[in-house]
Length: 276
Image (cartoon, rainbow, N blue to C red; front, side, top):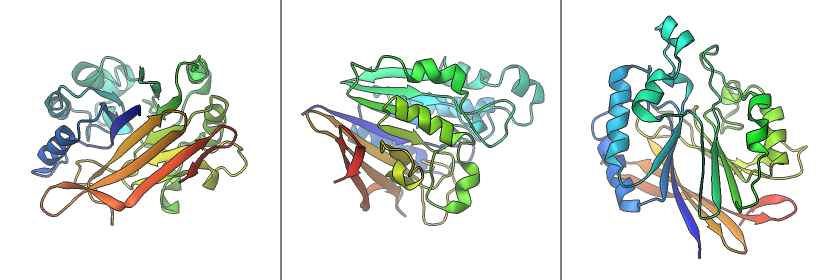
């Protein structure tokens, strides 16, 4: 059986990390040995050099596990106005990753990382559709399962967070549907969520999986949502299957799987994904 194992982290917010959390997360990832680690933005709290340096030490500490990332709105300088306008991604590029968008394939699983941030917006996000359309609709024939990672989500657990969803999400979803994207990985709201797109987008025929990871290391947690990450297993045999398990931090600084937060899906060739 061909399985790709992904550790989906988000919103680490280096600069706001409590003692022991980073070490516990690193230890758990080395224990699980994912095929790669995906970080969906807000790696730092204020895009400052010491915070990017700390993020780089964390990434280097994951070796030999490869990691890929996209920036979040917190990875662009806020108070350094000239830096924000002239070189918004300088810290991200210098200390973390040379490009702020990714595109790679592993065992018939392709991951496309897209940048939903902008120097002109402080919090909300969107995707520049004319800029990304050709990339999203590019030839996916060698990829049996297609994943997209963005920072700003297309759905969320609580309606109070609707203001944090991608501003042009209807148009974005339509593009993803045309490309037959299987799953969208995001973060931003610090409140984990896994569901099917049909709940938020009932007028679209093809169902895709929407997975929003919580904050993996920051002290900026939400009620009922401690530090966490998503463990994703993608099967690419005759029947395409995806399982998502949420790992939560406990009072003893250990990340453990939440069996009540395990989601399993299987793909129908015509209508997309459905629960198992």
